Image 1 (cartoon, rainbow, N blue to C red):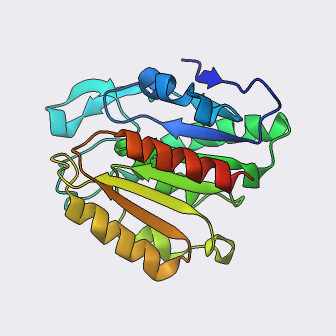
Image 2 (image 1 turned 90 degrees about the horizontal axis):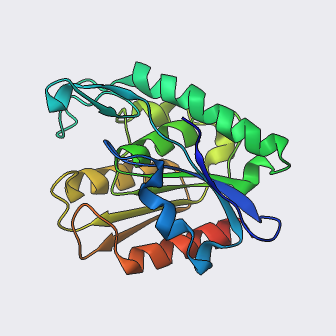
Image 3 (image 1 turned 90 degrees about the vertical axis):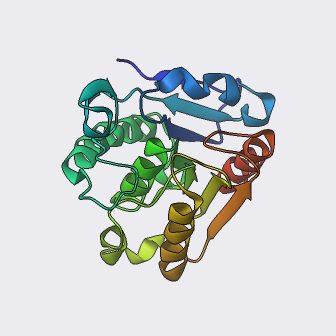
Length: 215
């Protein structure tokens, strides 16, 4: 399925590839990213493939990878993450062919899409312009950070999370932030008075992060 493209009126200052959460699709954030505060940026909103999700009794839905439970204590579906990563990397290469430099491409996402943005952004061979992770977590525990390229030490990262998130507990997000901060120098973690969702303050903070990172 072709990704949704939201293009800027003028030549874009950069591109953001933003990944939706489990069971949603690329249109989930279309209304938000058409707001004027984002109008200098090109957005690419892909759709995850349909696949069975173990946590939901094997029911098929759009998912970037399989999920076993929300405690995240069981093994994680790294093979599924790698499959989705290959697909998303092609979208990055398309932006590069359109004249956008890698450092002017950000990867971000919500929930499972946030985890996927960490997986891709911290492993991608070209240093991207930043990572935005909303209501998500760092997948694969410490392993994703063990082989971190030195070029990524200063990559800008924005994390936003609801204090009352009943899907991905704030404790999981806190743990992810601590692990990232131990290795990286530019990780910002903002907490909001909300659940597993977005609020206006987070959207404003996200637009500031995108525009500053793409200056």
